[in-house]
Image (cartoon, rainbow, N blue to C red; front, side, top):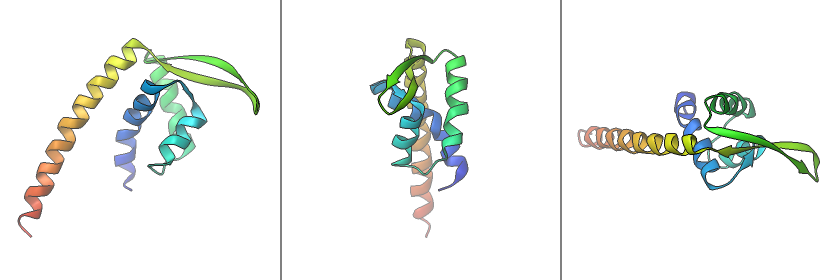
Length: 107
């Protein structure tokens, strides 16, 4: 899959997953990787940036499988941002899909 496609949609994927439940970084990587091939290193800088922009809060939780894990929780500000991104995504994909259909009609 095109790297630029993935970079553009990764932020939306992270926000959507955190809207449903709090998750730790590696869990986010695994969940996204089930659908889109990504590298672990692409998610953590994004998590740091979105936390700094106050879209997430973080907390540590003990783990039975090793050290404590840092969990990310979507804030109200993050939820508003997510809804904006979803609206933007829907408009964007609708436009792209329309162009694809128009292009296919000329084959």
